[in-house]
Image (tube, rainbow, N blue to C red):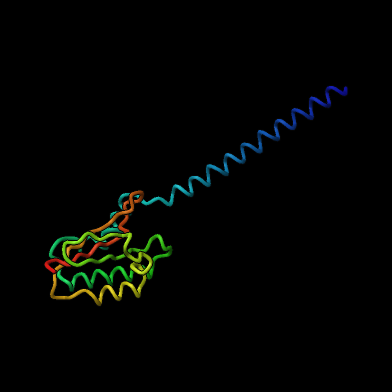
Length: 149
């Protein structure tokens, strides 16, 4: 009789452990579905980038570059997270823009963007290109290089 009661206790403990593991797996699967749902589809990335795509190219007039910077300002004001902010980096002539030499925080701030906009001359032409986040494909950096300086 004593062995039978011990066997029932052990069987109950095993069933309880299996139930706890099953509940844990269900919670894990639901959590991983929620996290993977935050990734952007290629259509969402295209829609996100389309806000800036029309400004890309060589010989972009300064007035269009100023409009682009205003678009970036509005975008950054509505960004919910700092990682969603777009930075604008500028250079004169045929120079390469080095991210290491630029105040990246200032390049995405409203004040930094206003200073950049003030430095853009409407009568000049600029080359506008983009830097993309390698994991998501979203535009994170806009490079503006003055042409013919």
